[in-house]
Length: 250
Image (tube, rainbow, N blue to C red; front, side):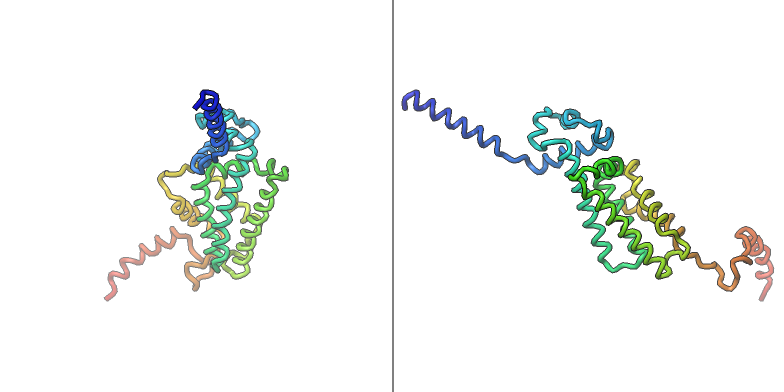
């Protein structure tokens, strides 16, 4: 083969190889790794203060290489938040469609919430800090709709519980909703995956503290009116005084 033909063939092959390289899609695994890194940076520094260069530095790559995977930091935070919310609503809808009672629904929603904090702790932190600011942009309009759905799900469950006598009749539904929402999701600020307690165990402990505050309390002795019930210490002292008399009986 003449040199000129060989050179043209070599040049053609190089062009084809170069073209192939530019059309190769990033692997899904690498994309997830980069999003995980970006989420941690956004959560720690805030969306406005985070630059593509900083994310690239944390990922151990050049900023230009990061643009090969994402066209902007806006695209990254969009995918982080939408992935988190898609998974959250898949879990919530399964709970809401299961036909559970109000108390069981609250328990299942709280448990699912802690599971999502375990899976998407950084995304939850971003949502809490940035959703109000981001939702003003058309691209992030789904954040507002998600918040409305979230509120409807919780308020509807609490209202049903009051109507059925499962929760206290004097319960302020909206106040209870805000308390539950804020005390559950604030866990993203301190929870770390792989810690001593599983998400399910944290949910169980949380529910044991909270539900006693919103469910009706039955008198310990229905024969004794609440106003006449003696303090616990006085009851124990009286029981102690009566024990010798009981031992003397045949």
